[in-house]
Length: 404
Ligand SMILES: C[S@@+](CC[C@H](N)C(=O)[O-])C[C@H]1O[C@@H](n2cnc3c(N)ncnc32)[C@H](O)[C@@H]1O
Ligand code: SF4
Image 1: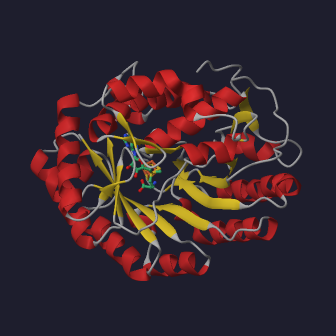
Image 2: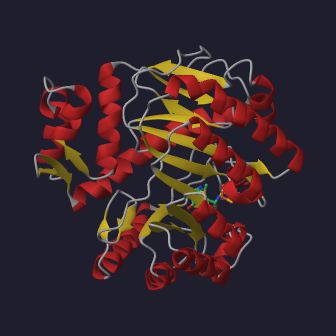
Image 3: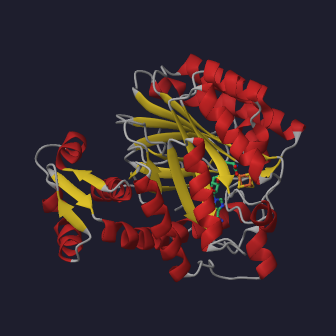
């Protein structure tokens, strides 16, 4: 990826909007995301610049049909009034009749906040529960206890959104299989519509990675990961959930909460990425550089061109992540003269022979065995991508080049 400025987007399909809010009240040492400690003055600069970035894109996205607005962080509600103003500005500039999804932190979502979000049109939430054990939450440096986490989930469900996801982390320091089973049971009992589970990865550039002096991403013990995933799968399925993605389990008839599985998307805010079909690019991570670049120039730090085959591969990557690959969906996006088999015969044949994929409903389904191995493969891809791109962009606001 190079510092070249890509053209403005045209002919986007199934467009998602993404907004990144890079502030948190408490910085968790394990976190690889672009986030800094909340500062009111800096938030003002950020807010002004996001409004300007929205206006810069507005003429190019007129007439687009949006499939979702996703608000991630950081902690998006760290300044609720500021967030509501940005959402208002998005609605004034784009026709948003789509789902609005937001990530929430248990300590920054009081009942008033939940009602304001619902009134502002938010339909889906994801809450960073992480663990229900006070001992483990303390071990990983979270600033809330298990009761606060479960209470936040209960209040969110009671407010009446279309879908509420609970994020849980596993393979954490000091966490036993019994602790993990207790976490899964607790979020199921609270009635979470979706459960997403992430093993703890340590990134060299995170505070945890720095304190451990690691040079490479530290992966959790694979035996532990497998045992904990087996528990998640059996407990969730016994309670009526089905696996809806490599990491997630969903109640029947509920809408799936997911972040970056849209075909094309435009990101606003520091570190937000965009995928336009012709280019993939990412904004500068540094809030001050982001704010001072706008409104004269887009705050894009690195960009790469995407050819048709890469765009197709990108589509396949996310469909595999969602465990379902439909031929019709592929043709709707890329035309009736191409088939999945003609473009990806090697990959599909290999996965089929290995029992990782099977033909189903005019396409393919990733099997239970496939879900485990594909998740291991995708980890390697996404961790390397995150580590190189995010590691460099967190280090310098305008890196010269990053090779993925
Ligand atoms: C942006 S945070 C969620 C919202 C909010 N900031 C919070 O922490 O509650 C996204 C999620 O990524 C997961 N996560 C963060 N750092 C991780 C790491 N090093 N390894 C695995 N999962 C991680 C956590 O489950 C976290 O809830
Ligand atoms: S895990 Fe969430 S609250 Fe913690 S630093 Fe990362 S984004 Fe902020």
